[in-house]
Image (cartoon, rainbow, N blue to C red):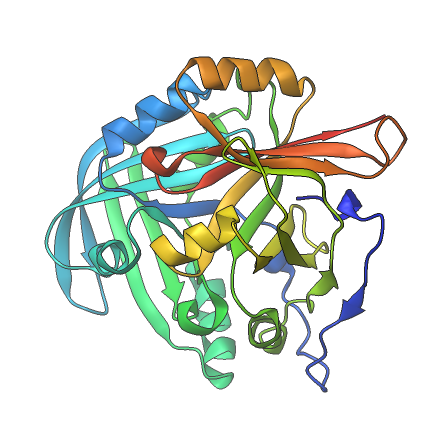
Amino acid sequence: MRNTLLMLSCVLLISCGNNAPDAPEYFKNVDQVLWVVGDLDHTISQWNKLGFNQIINLGTANAFMKKSGSMVKIKIAKANLGGANITWIQPMEGESLFTEFHKAYGDGAFSLVHRMEKKKGIRAECRRLAKLGVKVKEEIRIPTRKGELFYVVADTYDKGKYYLGFATGWDDEKMVKSLSPGNLHDLKLSQYAFAIRDPKPVSEYWHSLGQPEFQINEPVLGNPHYFGKSVDHSLIQGWQKEFDIDYEWCIPVKNPTVYDDHIKKHGEGIHHLAYSVKDMEAVLKDFTEKGFSVSQGGTWGESGKPGSGRYEYVDLEKAGGLALELLWSFN
């Protein structure tokens, strides 16, 4: 939820005590999200119902894992969800990073991927990360009917709560660029968001790799509700606003909250995609009539005044394991 949630906030910087290395330029832009699901066709159909149809279903493919030396069978699709480029992967046969994640956490996004012009750029960054104690988790090559995909995934999940990923290659870039962010309700990507328990070690970890430290807010929420019932809950937010799209780290304090629910079911990690919306009521009416539930929501600021707004979460547990947050701001 937005930084403007605050009427009363405490803003501070979690400090590691030392300056981080110079931040690589690639951190500023997420090229795509790698997302593992148990039923690709169902996931696509659910997002179609929400009004997202910029999807390329690449069907069945073989994925070659260099580090483990295995070849596995997967289903794969590319999507643009209102500005979030997604690569959905359904493990089919064989053991891999995909099955490892799915067995441990269930459906969910596991990697934010950054694009490099050439493989040598990825190799150089992997050498930099190795000096900081980060190993390569896996190198993945996926030939598809529209060209080859290539990823290197760094082993950052335990400390960073997602895998840092890299991609290169014209085939993949061409597929990403062919998909439009357009969707039924003109939703526009606003945040990549995470659910975690303790922001300090996570902030320190990413700062040590070159990312900005989290800016911590304690938001005051208006009219909070959870699955249709008024509640008294609270959270802490960690913000990284130096990127093209903000990162929001949600830390549940007083429950029930959707963040605590996610952590209990899927573990800490990527929790939702947040979108700005022009007509909140129209979108919620459409989504609920199509069978989707509003899981959590509320307001920020003084109602009807500049700086105020409303947030609502749509439960998409059965559409790939992430939530969708809608954000409306008073203008």
